[in-house]
Length: 247
Image 1 (cartoon, rainbow, N blue to C red):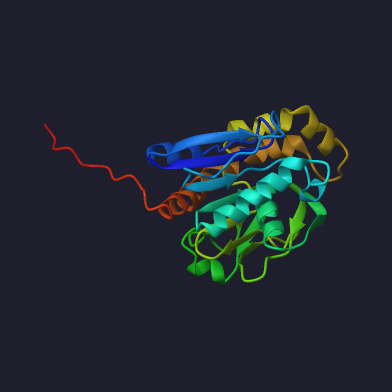
Image 2: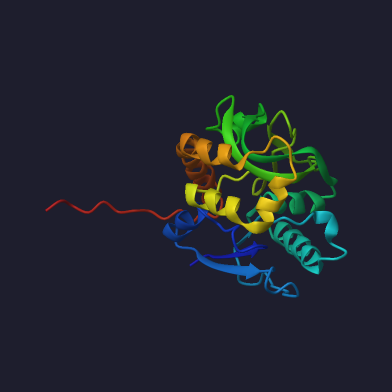
């Protein structure tokens, strides 16, 4: 059985739609909740991959939030061991920072459904090859990153140029949220800290996000199934299902 280490920062940001795919593929999953245990120092021994989820903090708060440095050390160790690594939102920023790229506030926050487009390189990438010219993708971030040196730029939006990258063949950073389902989105919009954040922003209407979610969520699930299934294949443990003879 393959074991996966997952770095979590807040209760409402979880594996989401990635979780059942991992379970079907036979993974054993361990969450490290840095929100509850900021001084935790997990080790990679015995694990076959690393997923780093999102969170409201900035990578540049590492001086005040010790666990961010801990996570960057984990990412570095995972890359040295050639383990698959996936970073989502804050996770992608932590990967970028670990690789020496700058992380900084985007010119405006993306919260809600935004057009995201693949680069030419994405047309040859196994994870993002199914992306059409423009896709409505769910976002919730204020920071962005430069594409790390030697990494491949995979996606962009009008508001935020650097949306996704691949480093080597097994490390992916996704600024956007493919892992959400409709219930998760509605839950995020009810979190007091999130509501407070939106209240201070012009042009972000939570009711509009609620209305748009049923329209775009089905296509998002199609993309997440493809992207996450291909990521699982990197482990070489995609579970094979046997066809039973009919009675």
